[in-house]
Image 1 (cartoon, helix red, strand yellow):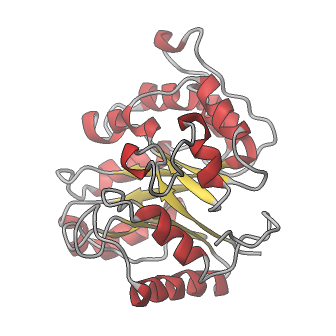
Image 2 (cartoon, rainbow, N blue to C red; image 1 turned 180 degrees about the horizontal axis):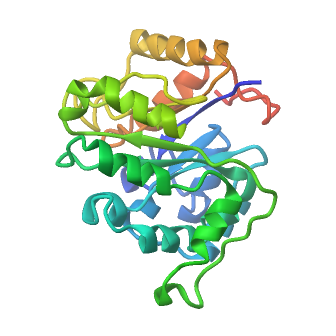
Image 3 (spheres, rainbow, N blue to C red; image 1 turned 45 degrees about the vertical axis):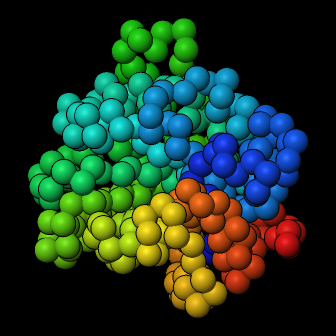
Length: 283
C-alpha cells in the first residue's frame, strides 16, 4: 500500500520554541515532540557535516515505530566536489552511521547547487555511483578513508532498497527537462518537485516509484506559509501519487516565520495518515 510521508525539513530551530514547541520543553525532547505529530522529518545536519554513529542511533531510538527520516546528502559531495571524484566522500558519508537508522531510513536527498548546470555525462556518472540497497551502501562504506577510522558504522541489518531524490536549482534543467527526466528514470531516482517562490526551477516529473516535494515557501522563500487553497492543491498532488501506487514524501522548509510545522500538520490532516503508525494525526 502506498503511503504519504509528510513532515518538516529539520527540527531544531530556536524561533520555534514557545511557538510550535511548548515553552519549557527541553531541547533534547524536540525531536520526539515533532515526531509524534508527523510521519517523517528531513534530516539536514548531514548536509553540513558528517554525523557520528551515536547521533544516528539516538535519532532512531528517539522516534516512534513506523517513523521515517529522509536524509540530506553532504554538500561536500554536491557543492564543493560538484559531483566529481566523489567515491571517497560517498564512502565516508555511508560509513558515518546513516545505516544505523535501519527501517527508519527513507529517501536520500541530493540538493544540487544553483551554479551547477545540466551536464548529462556528469549526472549520469554520479547517479550510477549511488548505492541501490543497504548492502550496496555498506559495501561502498567499507572503502572509507582513514578519517573515518574509529568513528564508522555501516550495519546492513535487513537488506532493503535505497531511494534517491535529486533537487536541482540551475535554470538549464528546465530547458533540458526531458533529458533530465529520462536520465533520472533510467537510474530510478526521483525528481524533487521544489516550490521556491519562483526562484528556482519547479520540475514536477514522475521518474521513480515514489514522489518527493520540498515546499520552501509559496510567495517568500523560506518564510511564507501555505493557505487552505494551496494546501488543498498539495493534498491533491499527494493523493494523485497515492492513487497511482507511489509513496509521496512532502517536507516543509518555510521555517523562518514558524510556518513549516503548522503547514505540515495541516497537510497531514488532508491526506491519509500512514497506516504503519496506526493512529490518526494529532490536532
